[in-house]
Image 1: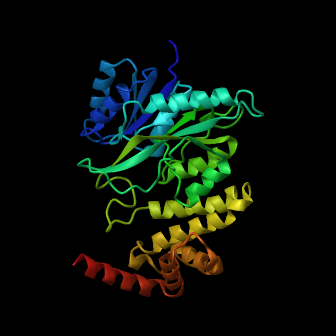
Image 2: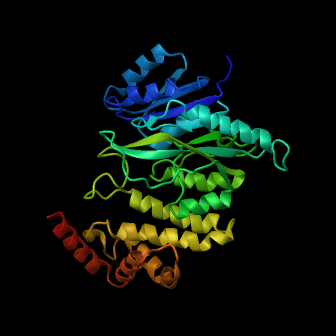
Image 3: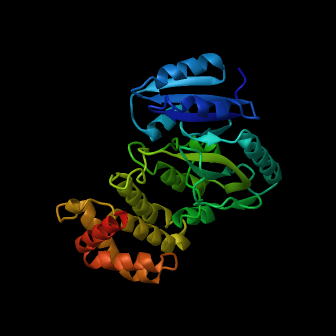
Length: 347
């Protein structure tokens, strides 16, 4: 059989209630030369039965069932099955515009043709569409990221800088990625880290240095649906997610592995590390803020070691710096005060 131009991977976990709508968005795309890979990640509801039914309705759908291992593990299983030249990802409860992949592919082909006579015609690049955030009722939420007004190309260092400063989009769901980026010739496969959150961010850090960059198009094709209880640190203010820890580990890896490649990003990397530690200290349970918690003590040590850089950072707000100063001096006391202030606001 002829290989499809694009492979779309959807990890599925207990997604019975909204999977069909998401799948419909993919299969009804104006660009039809695609395959859809549904990876059931050990769902406890009837998601896999629904996947089987969907696969029976459209020959472009392939399914795979595995034990639960998280989104990274499910995506990697899909990557190993994917046959397309380009690979995209959709979360099982999100939505995409009908012409999203047609517009992304047109931009990709245009850039490919323009680069054919360049100095590095064989170097891969990613294509990114814009995204918007909606709630479960479909209401538009305030935008964190800005879609460009015209097509633009960002080289790896510039795009990594945007991720460190939270002005760039770390999601692979808004990207089309050449298969060769995941399976480079004569190298080990470059896959999502498993068993941790923030896996998209870290894979970008590993992948981008071997690309020519990211082509951003002036279209908003992807809709992120925010649902309570999703696997993010923002799902519930009272819930402490391991994402707070995982992203700090990623931040440390950036300083250790990425800054030596791009030394000009050192200040941005430290700012990223400081900001994520601020987030951690404002959410970690107060009972876990003790000398027996080695991760907590390392976080506090980092604040002290980088106190001067924190004060001089142009990317931290005055409020950020105030909180970081107070948390460096008396973290438990500040957290107790912070909890009281938040409690009064809620009342």
